Image 1: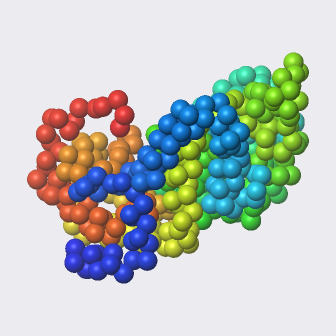
Image 2: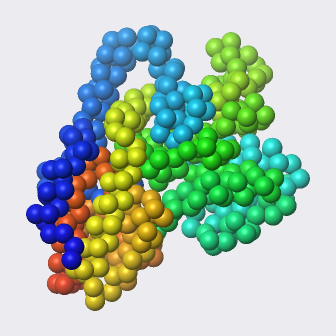
Image 3: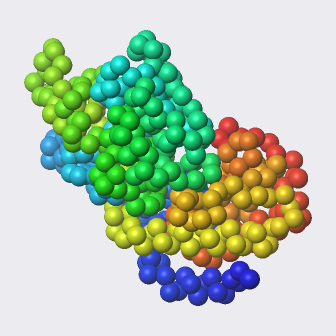
Length: 412
């Protein structure tokens, strides 16, 4: 039998990570299960951004590029993220969006493997990664093509024409987790390179880019890194590849001497050449606050708690929601999934909207997937119990049949 509410509350009182919840400004009474889509607001962020606006911008004006080291934000925050993803100093830079960073690193990888034409990915990959690969292939006009296979078929599909294996470590719908180490090794044995999207990994689970010998990675700043809506993304380039290619978005801050204002482009050495335009300072200082909240905790402890929360969620749903058409859509084995659980239901969208109306915030992904993110910095065992209690009540009463829950909003 699954734990009751009192047992869950006892687990929370004994939780060594419970103190980190105080670092977030959470709405009273809400159960927030969407940190895998937009992380919660750190308490430090509003004051830090306000200081940047009022003092650094308002009083110090343009001198803050030096005085407050605005110019150093992309690498400084990048080095902090590097500590969360198993990369070294000078191997991560914060810049642009995930989509643009995919374009940059995929361009680099293809240039490093001339003569090969296949970009291999899986059918569960996030669409923006696939769209960027398709667009870049058309732009290059060199016969590159994107090949998609089922997630479990990736290793066997790598062949002598594979230039790049491009995968998202944690599937955004199901939460299924790829074996980064094994698939990177398989790519390298075939002479290919590996690009990893860490959008649902960074800040959620231990990542070891160096230990896996990953070539390139990209990631998102507004999910488990708690950087705020539209936060800048990051990219990783292994040091061995950094000077081998000048990425095509040759903006001025990727120049070797941007303030020399030369007419011709000379790429900076190292990770600096993967920058492009002027950094969005307000967004970057917010992202730094979010990254600091994750760095304050032990990543192994975060992972262990997220696995326990996921197991609890699955156990409660299967005990309390059986017979109502809901089905598990994520791996049952906690080690095989990321920091989320997913279920399917034909009325998934309406059910999620009914949950939101009750203060339980998850999200929906077409065609029928209900996702629930598990951000252990601020999520409690009792929150899981309350979420499933609300879900069970909705399914039993068919509250989701209310027409207002079936009207599709622009963002699902």
